[in-house]
Every structure is written in C-alpha cells, then in structure tokens.
Amino acid sequence: MYLSKLFIPITKDLPTEAKIKSHQLMLRTGMIKQSSAGIYSWLPLGFKVMKKIEQIVREEQNFIGAQEMLMPTIQSSEIWKESGRYDDYGEEMLRIKDRQGREMLYGPTNEELITDIFRSSVKSYKSLPQLLYHIQWKFRDEIRPRFGVMRCKEFYMKDAYSFDLSDDEAKKSYNKMFFSYLKTFQRLGLKAIPMAADTGPIGGDLSHEFVILAETGESQIYADKNIFEIDLNNYKFNDQSLKKMRDDFSQIYAVTDDKYKEEEFNDKVKKDNQMKTKGIEVGHIFYFSDKYSKPMNCLIDDKDGKKTSVKMGSYGIGVSRLVGATIEANYNNDVMKWPKSISPFDAVIIPSISKNNKENLEKAEKIYKELQKQNIDVLLDDVDENMSNKFKKHDLIGVPYQIIIGSKSDGINLEFKELNDKSELLSLDKIKSKLKN
Ligand code: ATP
Ligand code: MG
Image (cartoon, rainbow, N blue to C red; front, top):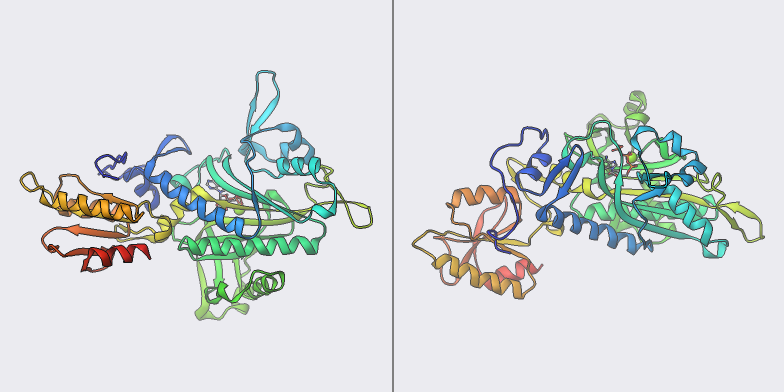
C-alpha cells in the first residue's frame, strides 16, 4: 500500500478529549473515529489491527476444539425473562421495540441465547461436551464510556460457552479455555495474569479475569511476581496436564480489588515479590453450572436416562478493547511499536524524496514490488515530506521494521531499522529473510 493512497487521516494536534495514550494515538493515526459517545467507526488502519487480533483469538479457540458460529446482535426479551435477567440487567441493556411492539434488545452477552439454541437441539449426554463461540458486536449502555475503545457502548467480543454433564467435566472445559486465553495473549505479545475474581452479574462460583499491567488500567491488582515465571510450554494439551497448570497458577497469589485482603497478601507474598498495580481486563471466564440451564429448562438425559440440567460456563475476550490495551502495553516515549503478530504492515519503506530527486522513490518502488512478491505486507511512504517528519509519523504508526532509502543506502545495501533500535546496512535478500521470519 502507498501511504498517499491509504485512508489514514493523521492529525497533528493532540485530541483534547483523549485522556490516555492509546486513545490519543488511535485518533491521531486515524485508526478510529468517534460517531457518538462510546460508539466508534473503525477506519482501515484500526480495522486491520483488530482483524489480526480476531484471527489469533479464533485460531486459539479452534485449537482447543471450540466451534465458531454466529448469533445475532438483536435478541428477543423472552429468553431474558426466563432467566430472570431482563429486570436484573438494568440500564446497561439497550431495549428496543420492533414495529409489532415486541420487546427486543441489543445483546450485551449471550448466555440466554446460546442456552435456548442448545436446549432445542441437544438432548443426550452423548453429544457432550460442547464448546461453542462467536465473535460479535455487543452493546452495553455504559454510564461512563471512556478511554476510547477500552470502555465503549458498542464493542467487539469473542464469547464462548461450554456445555458438560457434570461439574467435574465442566472444569475440564474451563481449564481448556484458561489455557487458550493464556496462549492467545502470549501470541499478541501481552503478559496477561489470570486473577481469581468475583463473578458479578453473570453469576457462579469460579471465575478468572485476565489482566495486563498498565498504569491506565481500571482494575486494581495485587499479585506475586512469581506468576510471570510459569511457562506455558511446560504443559501439554490434555486434561491432566491442564489441571496441573491451573493448580500451579492457583498456588500463586493474584487477585483483584474485590478479593483483596491486606493481611492475606502480606502473609502469602514476600515483600520483594509484591506487585500492587493497575491493569486492564482483557478477558474474563466464568463457571456458573446450572444458573441459566435450570431456569431455562435446558435438560440432558444422563447415562441412566435421568434428566439433569446441563452445566455451563462462559468465556469472553474483548477483541476491540485489545487494540487499545496492546497500545497501552507497548507505547513508550512517543514511540509505538506493534507486536509483529498484529502490526498493520510487516514493514515500511521510507525513501528520502524531493522535487528534483525522484531516484530514491523509484528505488523504493522496485523494492516494494520485490517484497510484495514474497507476500510481505509493506507500506511505502511516497509522501513528499522531510525525513524527520516522516520518522515522527512512523514512530506513531508503529510498523516495527523500516527500510530507509536515503544517504546511507547504496546500490547493494539498504538501511534497515527495527523501531527503537539502531539501523544496519543489509542486502535486500537479507532483509527479505529477516521479514519472512
Ligand atoms: P469490565 O469489568 O471491564 O466492565 P465486564 O466484567 O463487564 O468488564 P465481561 O462481561 O467479563 O466484562 O466481558 C468480557 C470482556 O469484554 C471483558 O474482559 C473486556 O475485555 C470486554 N469488555 C467488557 N465491557 C467492555 C466495554 N464496555 N468496552 C470494551 N470492552 C469491553
Ligand atoms: Mg469482567
């Protein structure tokens, strides 16, 4: 893509309404545009990053055997009345009426809808376990939408639901999701801590929040630094090993506000290892057993032909929030560097151009074509602007690799630079193989 052709409305001024770095940066580089309070359009650059995150989330869901489906955004109020949540959910639920006067709502989450689908299709324990997920827009009429895509009214979420015959079986599904979440965040270049959490309006007794460290986060966290020492590679994808993984995590203190007790923290965590900091919740998983299946009559025949309520869990990842959260985690001294796995481009070519000298641009175009042939997704900065402005701009756009065509590059070697690092002179072949890895 040529930068001059890319729809990327970069603004020089710092947006005054944006309080945190990720929000400022997303507005400045034209990743998003607010359409009304807490509701955003995703412009090409932001959309590209979000889609890459979505794909990683999807791959890690598929890996554990979860099946993708798609439920609608608009739901009927009937099922919510059955579960008892229509009144409980309160003002955060956007309620709408269709032309027949039927009460509808824009789904804030999907426990009721998936339970309704499940009860009408599955009758026997033989079809269990099941793991289903979808990636779909949600609406919650947040009282104070803020921080850009971090807390919006309309946001993009992956939500998964597990169905099992017994509590024991259900915990195996829970552990699989726990593992999948940690792998997902690792691939996004994020260090997420699973924290024992309260279950809130979703209900149930077992729950973990996945939180990444960031000063601007809304969650207060208390944890033992040793939690970062647990290595996922030490566990295999089977029930026994995943149980071991969960046990290992549960040995290490990590809780959010609502479970924190000072005395317990000081008792269990050595002074040097104590982390008291802020974090951003990027995922949340719940095991709530028959909280929805019981009132909604979602019954399964067990091995003896006896009817029993199916045991359920639900598992959410904030896909759109992750775009902002990743920026918060990676922004440093006015430089933003995307993790390679989700960068909007693999590399950017920055030629030094002037009115009288088109030679560098021609050279850049040749390299551009070469890299494209190798399936390297490359941006070419063909804008006639001085180099120092260009560098400032690319510090914000955050493409991790730069090929600079200026005084240092000669006929054979090109100036190659990783953001936040020194540049080096490399042949195009070497650059290609670097980018390919
Ligand atoms: P929070 O505690 O941040 O309000 P929640 O506990 O209400 O979130 P869940 O129902 O657990 O949220 O939703 C799953 C995930 O969806 C959250 O971990 C978060 O990443 C994301 N999410 C929730 N609410 C919002 C929102 N208003 N804007 C953007 N993302 C959100
Ligand atoms: Mg939550």
